[in-house]
Image 1 (tube, helix red, strand yellow):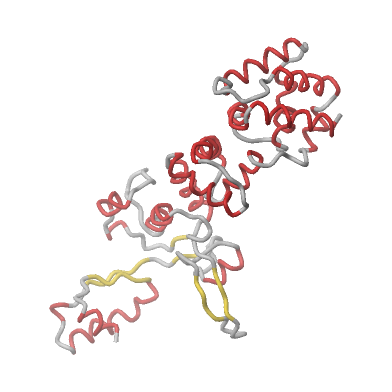
Image 2 (spheres, rainbow, N blue to C red; image 1 turned 45 degrees about the vertical axis):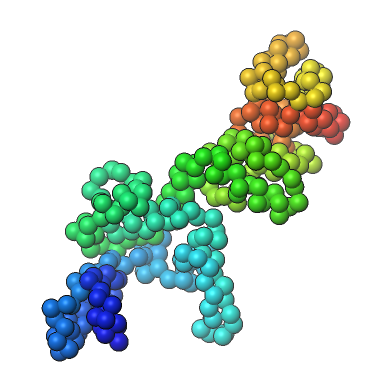
Length: 308
């Protein structure tokens, strides 16, 4: 039936997996017997796609077992053994960008002959040729597609990325304007792999911490540091001012630490944990500027009250 379909649709090229190679002679004969040899498409075969460990052909079950999608979009089916309905999330639902998926798939069994890895669709169309398709099977590399996704995510403008965060905030009943969302994704995008990561990574911009990283607290928090942070809170303007940017807040921090006879490095991690709850994050003073001086001062005093 596929021979008739391809003929009626004027298919010029049939490109399929190498498991079809044994059927290729039969298909050629069918075209000849039907008198369609002159319009017979060209046949090409792609190498198999192997499991991440290279031990066999990749299947849907491998994706379910190892925790990665094998379909472009959500797939609804039926379990062959139990008859129960099944739902498999696709790359779209898992937060992979279309351009990342296309770029990744293009390199499975093909290479451009150069060191270039990032290709737009137009560039792929210009560069692709069947003579550079490998005869060896291609191993599926989940880390590689994640790398592609990170690249394309970070290449987007803050304006393009802000809706991802705004959508998540709306789902949690949190109001935020476009300008603030753009500021947040701008400082966070180097730390995320998927659009849905923005909410988890940037949550402290909207919710004051209720827990603090104990590793930092046990090593960096002491009465002298607590007093220094209290002094910094007192120096911060009560109301956030446009002039209180990251550089201003950093300079004020250094001045306050000098007055407390402390080096900034002795207090910096404690400051981050007191304000965000986390031991790591984007540029700290950029984050403080986005939060606003009033909110930062409130969080510092709350941390001092809880931690002593």
